[in-house]
Image (tube, rainbow, N blue to C red; front, side, top):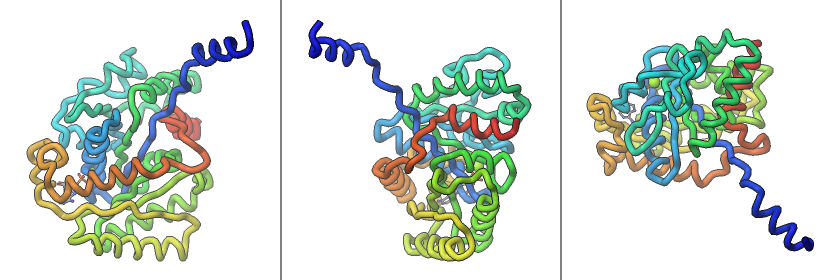
Length: 291
Ligand SMILES: Nc1ncnc2c1ncn2[C@@H]1O[C@H](COP(=O)(O)OP(=O)(O)O)[C@@H](O)[C@H]1O
Ligand SMILES: [Mg+2]
């Protein structure tokens, strides 16, 4: 075989390296500011742009993503870990073909896993990287250890806040706690603010300017601005209809803004030097730290 043939052979036989899914963690300083709304509507916006999206509900409290999507998951992460279900078994289909995985009690149970179980779980989650282009993690609110672990392990974080003063101080408190964690490497995480329920785009920008001013002054963290979502009553109506605004009122102001945010995110480089570690890598570092 001459060199050219050998080369061609090599190219033909080499499988493309699987690309890890882009993992986006949605968080906020306090509850009720729109994290789950952002998670479900961005998911649909990404799906409309041809991406395969899976939402992972890592909220330990009320499982409200399923309410918003109007889906009823029959299994959760714990079933994957302890009851021999496959990844595909625990994904429930939502609007526009997006997938949903309920964290259920699984996330709490994970904290007690042995090293061996942990490696096994991470390996099985790798499959999720192959089934999706984007994984959105909806975290609970606040500064609990579990939320912090997810934020620290994520290369992309969306911080949701509203113009109310308490929301801004709570967002700052979250960043301040993050700043104190030795495990947090700022170069590895890109934190972007979404200003939700704003009266107009200027109000969103003002929110960002206020927050970034104090962050710049007192913390060794940098945040950037993704954009805003207007206060829109159709958002409230959609929650009651159990159909996200992107699916029920795609022409609404809120839906348009989610579309814009999604386009902006797709245009941006997912993350700087650390690269994509995928969902398995993220869980491994979340759980590994607890061993
Ligand atoms: N842009 C918006 N305009 C109007 N209402 C909103 C907007 N975003 C969220 N809401 C409402 O605020 C409530 C809390 O939102 P949710 O996404 O559940 O917050 P979180 O997940 O942070 O607790 C929901 O009932 C939702 O209808
Ligand atoms: Mg929520």
